[in-house]
Amino acid sequence: MDGIYLLLGSNLGDKRETINQAIKSINSFAPVITKSYIYETAAWGKMDQPSFYNQVILVNSNLNPEDFLQRLQQIEIALGRQRFEKWGERTIDIDILYFGNSLIKLENLSVPHPEIQNRRFTLVPMNEIAPDFVHPIFQTTQAKLLDDCKDNLQVTKTEWK
Image (cartoon, rainbow, N blue to C red; front, side, top):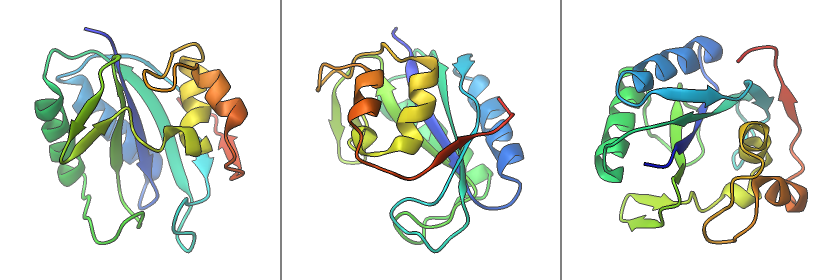
């Protein structure tokens, strides 16, 4: 199966440690192939909250998309994720960006992630590890999506992977 790209984000508690714990849990059922650096960004969508740490990882899995999503949501819950408001603060958020080249439209899952092209905090780490990966709907690379992105939030690379 083609690789699965995930975006991990955290803006509560020990953000770096929470992301690392999420990666360990994911690695138990979907081996991590590579990961970007962690990037710090101001909150997107709802500005009055702490900044986020974001990281993109590439994994492999033979699970179907629904089972894969369920496993990710279990990890979020185990790490203290509570869903109170859209774009609100969270200990961890794990988004499926791409599931290989699959186009998935389910009630609780849209892949590719419908907002990739509008979010610099996603495109910068994605571009770091897969600049030539072609978006299966737009038929353009991550590098081109980043070049064309209108989002002007600053995305700052940290020293951590």
